[in-house]
Image (tube, rainbow, N blue to C red):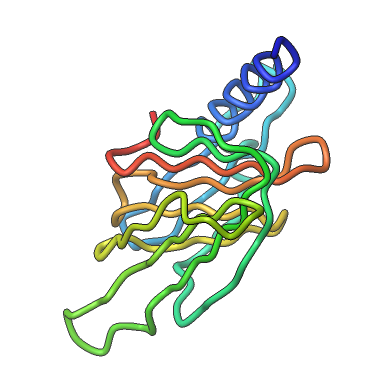
Length: 157
C-alpha cells in the first residue's frame, strides 16, 4: 500500500511538472517547453528554441495499455485505453473524441464522449486532450517505462 501511495505521489508531481510546460496558442497549435532542470537564468527567447509545435490529430482509433489510470480522482491499475478521434470537421459539426477505459479483464471502467475536445500527439509519444485552447482534460505519458493516464472532464490543473 505504501509503495502504491508513493508511486501516486511521484506520478502526480511529474504530471503537474509536465502540465506546467505547456502553452496553448490561439491558432490551435500547442507549444511544449521541456523542463530545463531548474535553470532560472533561461530567457524567454532561449526557451522558445526548446519548443515543439503540434496540431490537433483527426480520424484516429487506437489502444494503449497503461500501468496506472487516474480517472476523476479514482486510481486504477493495469488498464487498456481506447481512443477514437472523429475525422477532420468539414463544417461546424465536429464529433470530438470518445474514450473507453477497461481493466485487464475487459470490464468497462470509464466511457465518455468529448464533443468539443481535440487530441494532440507529441514526439515523445505522449498524448493530451483538451477543449479548444483552454482546458486540458486528458494526459497520457510515459514515466519510468510505464504509461500513465489521467482524465478529468472538468480540467486538469
